[in-house]
Length: 124
Image (tube, rainbow, N blue to C red; front, top):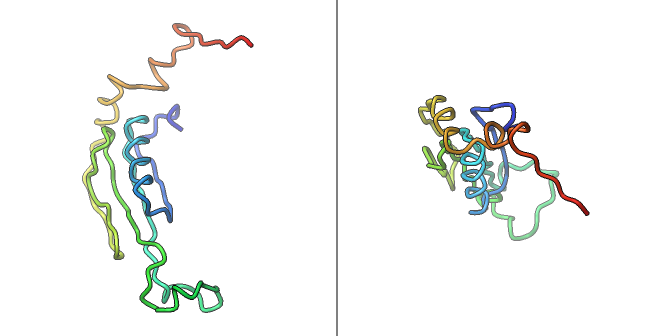
């Protein structure tokens, strides 16, 4: 997708671990793109009645997925979020010119990947 010069990377998930946030920052920096990660916040009471749940989630207020939505800029800075423990909407002002500026020092699919200037081969 980086070779398509994306400026906004959408990343919906149910993953609320710290490693997900780090992954979103990495994608933003590597692709010099904004990342909008929409993470689910779900309580037991929000699940369909016919969906079986372990006994530990018998309380309707039990949290199944804790959220963690965030917005990251092309340099890895978190602009909004992470939003944990509740439903909500994140808002951040973005400037897509930052994607272009960022590629001046890191452009993995542009000047760093010119086939006329760089050839990589592995001989076995």
